[in-house]
Image (cartoon, rainbow over all chains, first blue to last red; front, side, top):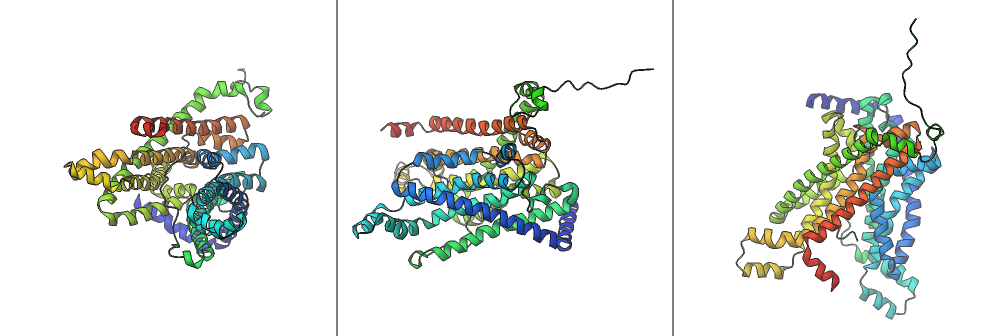
Length: 235
Length: 235
């Protein structure tokens, strides 16, 4: 059994070398799709979460959006999207955005909501406008938690984009769900690529987080930190 | 001459042939042969994964609570596995364990471990030093303190972790259908390939409903096992 398994892994390495053009092309499609979906989700989730957190309102909505998001299986979102939107890019984008918005929104809300009230008070006392308070005090202090949400969402999106292949999403999922054409070697090779891509996405966002963190707060932003906070309460 | 034998597959209703959004007659006919077994299998897949994951992670958390150098390597490994997309992890295990339930369970257990481990450990560590001091003052041994003080106080965090683990395992188990035709992912995937709307919607709704019911049940469990929290809630 072990020998057979090693054989498959050896063959899949051959596949990676032989089919590097195919894999690169699919990986690139995968990155474009994931990046587009993540960008839309950030554009939707961050402003809403930050606004609600700034006003300290809507905790019920913000927390429960995440719970519902967790309960809805990816495959169901894709399948139901397929029923209403048919095959193609739109369906896949909608499904990925639906999955990525909850962790982003909830983390943005919690991050801003729990910023030290004294710091906000002090900023107000210095005569800052609400916008300045958000921009210069709340956001920098909320950055680690906010980014934890975006990193979780990024891993979600990269992972889910593979399943999207059955609804015409393209990317590495095309290989992953098509063992008939690519055989086990191809599927294992694609699985390796997707796993590396997910880890790379997390690491890349970690670097971005580091770059955006003001120097005074930069004591520790590890390059690889896949959201290891405990889930304290789920509402 | 014998008459040609044409097998009788029954007759599809207009609703089914026209592939309308929801056909009650199809659901009635296929509940017993298709939907119910899939639902039961789904519950089994989830229960086994969370059960095994719970034993592993509580054991590891207790170990890490005693020997602090165990925590980092274990948490890191669990976090790396957690980042690997589910479909990819299933496929990576196929050469080793084949297209079996074992493959699915190994992957599902791995995903529950990170959630349960970090929550259990956080719960154990959240016990206030004053309480521990009081326990020692009452002459409790280390084991007595663990079983009668630390673990009960860690229960809310452990149950919070269980809720997240159960709900996300129910969602992830749908993806298992790419490896073995078990659980609600089977009908969803099959219907997706045939473009049959009723089955997609009903099986999808069952998966989401199952997650919500499981979550509500665990909230009730939490109230039963932590009766002291109720007085705090009303206060």
